[in-house]
Image 1 (spheres, rainbow, N blue to C red):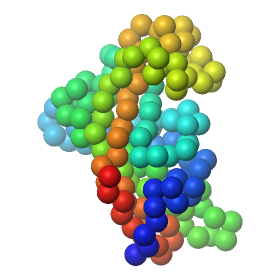
Image 2 (cartoon, rainbow, N blue to C red; image 1 turned 90 degrees about the vertical axis):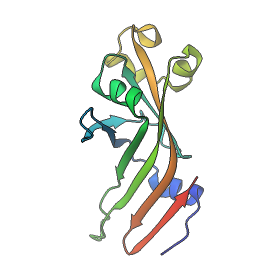
Image 3 (tube, one colour; image 1 turned 90 degrees about the horizontal axis):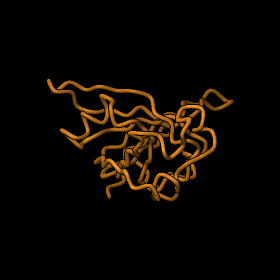
Image 4 (cartoon, rainbow, N blue to C red; image 1 turned 120 degrees about the horizontal axis):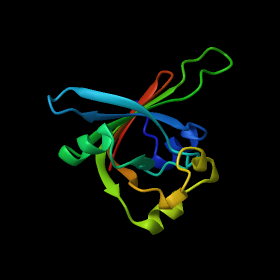
Length: 144
């Protein structure tokens, strides 16, 4: 088992844009959906995802803010398994326009034509509480 710092792990995660956001359904089952961090890949234990208010993910987070994120890196050229990162955390729904503007990137115009003024637009902020990683034969855990 290795002991990477969050900073060291963030370097290894550079370039991973998509994650699987997992929430709890009404029945207690796990629901997952892919989410993009829109190129905000300087991982510091916080993840930010744009969403619309009228989605299952948002309703599920309102009922139970405990969520999980799964990141997978690319397989190496030498065939070594990719980096895997599992994050447990708490989600918060952020509607503050300054926060929306801070995390906005031009590519989002494709999905949200009115930009940060899109009705029902919000950010899902996931603050990690536990991060477990596997990098080849190395693995470790970071608690926040």
